[in-house]
Image (cartoon, rainbow, N blue to C red; front, side):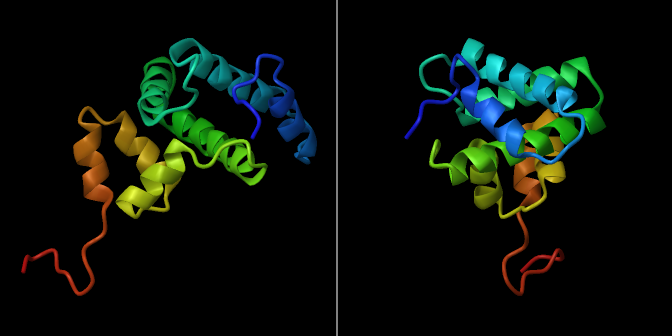
Amino acid sequence: MSQWPDADEALLNRYLEQLRYREIGGYRSWLRGFQRFIQRHSPRRGLTDRVFRLWVKDRASETTRSFVIRQTQFVKNFMDWLVSENVRRSHPLEDLQRRYECRSIRAIAGALMDSKPNRALEALRPLPRYGSHLGA
């Protein structure tokens, strides 16, 4: 298993090369900023749930909600690629999707930007089978 984030950005460059986009400059900038944030806030352990939540909050303080959601979706694609390349076993977004049974990255990113993210994430959890919003 390779080490990520890598100092020379070889994995990042390999990911961007396999994309079929004309202009990847913006995506490179987003992913480079994401990778540097991870290196700054968790140099030894890499991407953890806590650090990912910090990144979302940091981005939300600097830009619009819709732009943070867009960046989160692109970061998820990169993290999925890292998992498919056996660089990582899983990633925080995948873990959040599994834990709260929510496939929507938009909903998860929105919940993480909420003032009470844990409560917002719990609200994403679907009702149990044959459950009702009216109660038992």
